[in-house]
Length: 327
Image 1 (cartoon, rainbow, N blue to C red):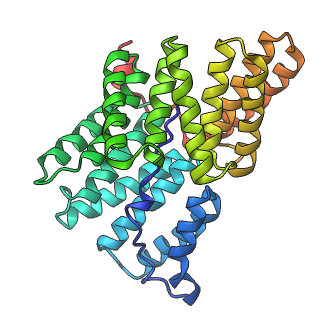
Image 2: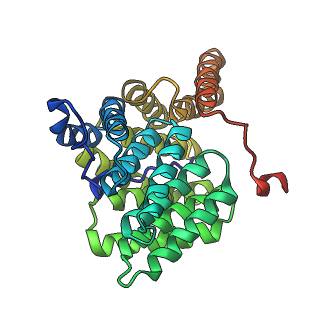
C-alpha cells in the first residue's frame, strides 16, 4: 500500500497569525504548535490553530499571516484524516492569496500542492492532477524555482499516477525526487525517507520485492531516528513493510510490523482515521493467510467501523470525479 507520508508544510511556514488572539496564552502558542506537530500530536495542535483562526476572523484579519495560518490548519486537518476541513482551509488560504495578489509566490504554490493531495484523498483524481500540474507550472515560472519544491510536487503527482496505475510515470517521478533530495539534503533527511517510502511502496506494488525491501526498511529507520518510534509516520512505514514481508512469506516479521503500526496509530491518531482502518485491513489479510479467521473477522469489523466514521466525517460520496465515471 502506498501512503502519502510527506512531511507537511509547517516546517517551512512557521509564522502563525496569533497576533490577532486576545488571550495572552495564545501569543506563545506558535512554539507549542511546532513542538506538538513535530511529535505527531496533531489532535492537540488542532484547537490551538482553530482558536487562532477564529481570533483572526473576529479581528477582521485578511492578511498574509492569516493565509499562512489557514495553510497550517489545513496541514493538521490532513494529518488527522479530516480531508473536507483540510480542503476548506487550503481553499480559503488560496482565496486570500489571490485577493492579496500573491498566487505566484512560493508559499501559495505549496498550498496549491497541498490542496491537490487532499483532492486525491477525496477520490477526485482528475482534479488532483490538474491542481498539482498547475502548482508545478507556477513553481517553474518563478524566477528561481526551488528544486526541492519541485521534488515535493513530483512526489504528489507520483501518488496520483500510482493511484491511476500509471506505473512508469510514477516511478520516474519518485526516482527524480529521491535523487534530488539525497543530493541536496543528504541520505538521512526526513524528506529522503518520504521518497524512499513512496518508491519502495510502488516497487512492492509492482512485485519487485527485493528492490523494495531496502528502501522501505531505510525509510522506517530514518523516521524512527528523527521522529521517535511512536510517530504516525513510523506506523505508515511499518504497514508498508508488513505488506512486503507478507508477500515474501516472512509472516512473523509482517505480524510484528502490523501489530506495532496499529498500536502506534491507535494512540497517535483519531479513532476515525482512515490509516488506522488500512492497517487493520492489512493485518486481517495476513491473519486469513495464516488460517486465523476469527481474529481476522474481528479486525475486519473494526476496520469497517473506522472507515464508516471516516466517510461520514468527510462526506465521502457526495462528489464524483469525471475521470472515474469514464472507467
